[in-house]
Amino acid sequence: MGVEFENNVVVGKSVTLDELMQNEKFDAVFVATGAGLPRFLGVPGEHLNGVYSANEFLTRVNLMRAYQVTAYDEPVYDCRDRDVIVVGGGNTAMDAVRTARRLGARTATLVYRRSEAEMPARLEEVRHALQEGIDFRMLTNPVEFIGDQKGWLTGARCVRMELGEPDKSGRRSPVEIKGSDYVLPANVAIIGVGTTANPLIQSTTPDLKTTPRNYILADPETTRTSKRGVFAGGDIVTGGATVILAMGAGRKAAVHIHEYLTTGAWEPEPAVTV
Ligand SMILES: Cc1cc2nc3c(=O)[nH]c(=O)nc-3n(C[C@H](O)[C@H](O)[C@H](O)COP(=O)(O)OP(=O)(O)OC[C@H]3O[C@@H](n4cnc5c(N)ncnc54)[C@H](O)[C@@H]3O)c2cc1C
Image (tube, rainbow, N blue to C red):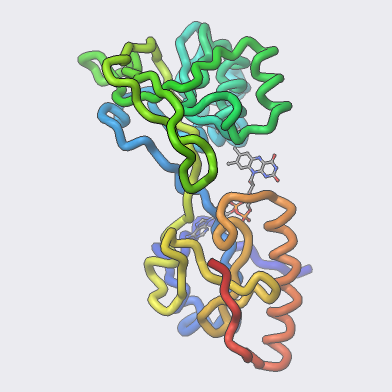
């Protein structure tokens, strides 16, 4: 169809969105940069060798084929005969802990600060994880990662939690039980507590309106943003969602970009989602 691919371009670093439109004369831009910026716990020791985000772990193992150890030399911390903990209770955490198990981890432990009833992961994932021998440590929260003198992870200091009053999400909030801390042995710790908006385009495009959490504001029907000629859709607008919703946004964008390019109309001002 004549689509051109420009690889190795990070918009907001290699080139800004304004430069694309002003210098390179693109008439319209669709921003679909996703919500792939991993969240971390912000606890001491998170920089140690052996601690990484679930996104990095899964990308290295699956997309970059570290699971085919003999054919690919993609570096990934060796899980074989090691103690692996995964922090989080969603589908990504579940994916990471089951992957670690299949890579030969001696123990593969899921650490989650609420109880199983509050876990956002699909029930099917939970069932399969239990069948695969994943150890569930519910109502447990890491407060520090501990390492050896060379900076390699050796364990996670965890505290036990109990459930208090419901929070904004409607789920009962976890409250630390004082003095309950203990050390869980771990050579690899994978943080799967969610992701947030990829930030570069927003931080380098001053007239692009965003939500307080830095997602791009765009009309859900037309995908128009606050900036003329710029459309946005997928996770960068909705927050982490699904492939099918992102594809749907792409289709809506195609229709409305075509309309804009053929009529030049950018009215009325886009309604925005929050
Ligand atoms: C581990 C995991 C498992 C998942 N499993 C499922 C599942 O089973 N089913 C499902 O429907 N959904 C699943 N999802 C969610 C799904 O992946 C997303 O909802 C979907 O990929 C969003 O599509 P997108 O096009 O908006 O963003 P993405 O697919 O995240 O694509 C964004 C792209 O933009 C690139 N990018 C970012 N910033 C810039 C920049 N400044 N310049 C240039 N390029 C940039 C990124 O590198 C990336 O390639 C899963 C997500 C994760 C993390």
